[in-house]
Picture 1 (cartoon, rainbow, N blue to C red):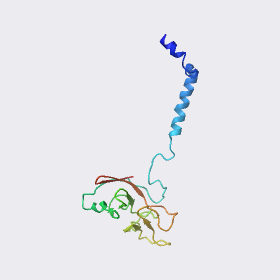
Picture 2 (tube, one colour; picture 1 turned 90 degrees about the horizontal axis):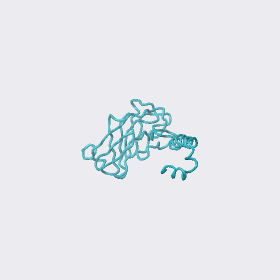
Picture 3 (cartoon, rainbow, N blue to C red; picture 1 turned 180 degrees about the horizontal axis):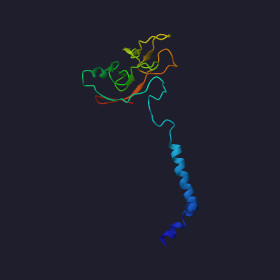
Picture 4 (cartoon, rainbow, N blue to C red; picture 1 turned 45 degrees about the horizontal axis):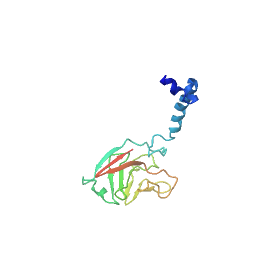
Length: 168
């Protein structure tokens, strides 16, 4: 009797099993399609660069250690060798914003000369091209002269207290 009382008050769509089943199937198909993103991997390095294959990077830097202490002060860089493709450069922009880029020139196939040299906020590749050497800004990772060139390979970076974590 209790069931009959509420059954009479249900909307018509819920009283008929075929309509209810169709509605449920429609929801199960439409909701996942709407929630899909065209770039589900959220990769910062998703720039389709044919020269580079991003390596797996998961580094923790303790700013209390002497080799990483310069990163406590804005404007300083630290190079982490033997990580990434040709090493990773970390730049402190303002103590709350850091950048981390691979030191391989993104517009060359990795070679002995494609490891970039850092001077200030500029990373320069010593390889000579027909257009001269490539140089990049360490704040943005962009090529300084050619807006169509591939940007530097960027890594995610976060700071909690005196610990910096670099991942991809």
